[in-house]
Length: 91
Image (cartoon, rainbow, N blue to C red; front, side, top):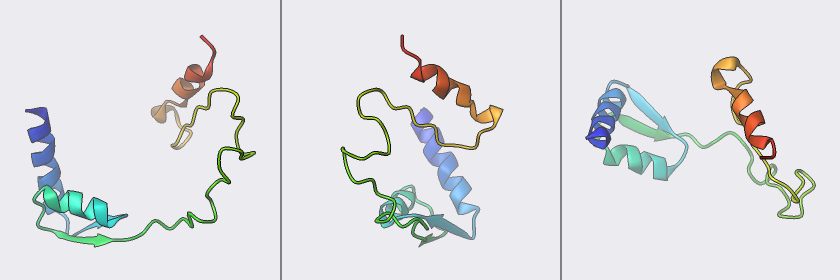
């Protein structure tokens, strides 16, 4: 029932828009598969993924000999960055 509710609410929300923007054709197809009738446009990510791709497992960007915790979000209390810090502590 929850999945049906999310699909219905998502479809209704997208159908309220004049246009829905997606990063990839795959995302566009997923939105279309929800039954969305609004116009859907693909706007590629503005990040040059070739330039910002690490060199591989031997990259100096992170130490590979221990756990890595990544937090993505604005550093505001509502995003709860403290949880990422707590998760990085040894047990």
